Image (cartoon, rainbow, N blue to C red):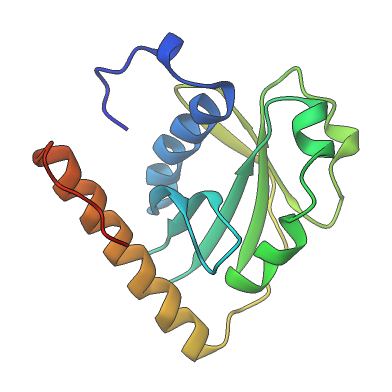
Amino acid sequence: MPDDIAPTQLMPGQLLARGVSRAMRSHDFVAVEELVPTSGLRVDVMALGPKGEIWIVECKSSRADFQSDHKWHGYLEWCDRFFWAVDSDFPTELLPDETGLILADAYDAEIIRMGPEAKLATARRKVMVQKFARHAAMRAQAARDPGFVNVF
């Protein structure tokens, strides 16, 4: 997400995603936002680690946002670790204990609870790394070329 976009132009979940994406660099991960691992699912942040680790982070801006999310269990089979990212006012007792927790704002984030590791199968990891790379490349091209049309 470009730095020239004012925080007021972004939705609350997008602000959390930006802070999470920035924080992932301190863990030597790179991140993309709004990646589709499979039809019917779209993750807020997918992060790729230096050894091919894949983390998914779902950003929740309110109690209602969390309670209306009925797809999050489907994300677990597409990552090695799963996290929720919320701001400091979010009632974290709502979040399942068996998931990771990140406190975030528009500028940074901190891992409070590490999500349990459930390693992806090699074939699934390869598919996800390819999707990550293609998604990142398309985003980079679109940022450089306003006339770029994503045909996928």
